[in-house]
Amino acid sequence: MNESKAAANAAAAGSKTATLTFNETGESWELPITDGAMGPSVVDVRRFYGDTGAFTYDPGFTSTASCSSAITFIDGEKGQLLHRGYSIEDLAGKSDFMEVCYLLLHGELPSAEQKNKFETAITYHSMLHEQMLYFFRGFRRDAHPMAVMVGAVGALSAFYHDSTDITDPHQRMVASHRLISKMPTIAAMAYKFSVGQPFIYPRNDLNYSENFLYMTFAVPAEEYKVNPVLARAMDRIFILHADHEQNASTSTVRIAGSSGANPFACIAAGIASLWGPAHGGANQAVLEMLQQIGSKDRVPEFLERAKDKNDPFRLMGFGHRVYKNYDPRASVLRESAHEVLDELGMRDEPLLELAMELERIALEDDYFVDRKLFPNVDFYSGIILKAMGFPSSMFTVLFALARTVGWVAQWKEMIEDPQQRISRPRQLYTGYGPRDYVPVDQRS
Image (cartoon, rainbow, N blue to C red; front, side):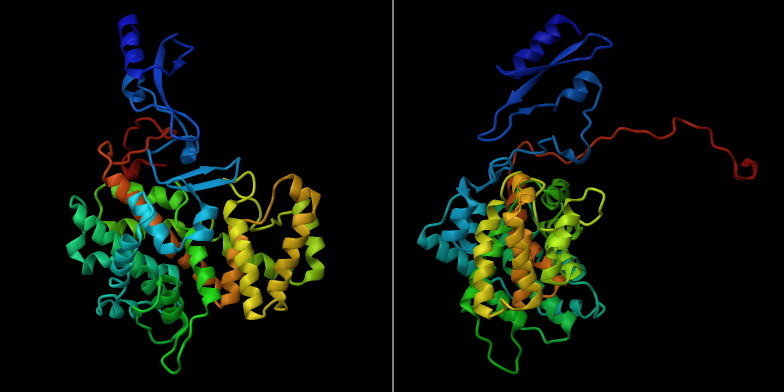
């Protein structure tokens, strides 16, 4: 590499650069370093392949910033989660889900007038096209609700052609509103279909969380009154799951959207990604673990097994891949979990009593405290949803319902980014080199 080219690259890089040197050839390249508003700086490798002919290698993209975003910030070491600069503790404690939705979509908390207008728009989009009811009946009765969700959300693009032009800002916003508003209706219908009960239509006099509980648990034969404690807990669960930076499902939505796919297809892709047990199934795994433990008197035995590296048993719902300290969402949901159990008088229900005993011992055990293996959001959300009467097959559905606003906000941000390009990850090829074709009758 000649000196003039190196100088040009350094000038283009700006004041902060990293130098990469190939030991074999002695060639060096200056790579720009960009600082974010918070968090780690990034080494810009966009020109790397063109300049060097080499790729960077990062399986899982765990050290790669795939985009720039102003929506959510996570500091796992500090146990910090911010949406547009506001702490999750403040939002979950002082706000409601509709306000958080507006914040994620628009970047600022709404005024009273803006909030009222937004809530009205969401409320009046909550009905589904009547022909979609026939779509549900095409599934087997024992279909997993997530399978129904993937199909139904993807099918929205066949019913709402007037909001699939991603180049039109108005259509983008209409699609965003429709996805947020119709997701509870679809989720509730998926549940009703699985248990053989009639669909319940949404009511415009109920708020978002109340409406979802009504559509899920009401039956035509009797009046259903929404419990305000359960509705508030549901609202908090939605807030705490609304967005979580560039996780697998959000990245899936962005990758699908980078091709120009319509928003309904992109969100369906996100739901499919969330369905994976390593991503959206953690709170269901908590319930399965509690069932495996079985009773309070076996908690010490299983805690000892969790400490044994040679034992395959793992304590689900404790610790977090991102948060190396306490999950900031967990403290908020812990309060709601205890409120719900008290409200429903379920402290003595064996499985939930077992969960509370596990929480108590783990929080006092030096092994877990020293390693910061605290209960996370999945531990408490599993307890709450179980107490409310949701089957475990619905847990990931509720995750998808809540995360829809995050997916939509991330998709919208990506579409409006002038630097957005179609995603095209590279690979390290390890297969055969060129080979001659051998006719079938000559192969041994």
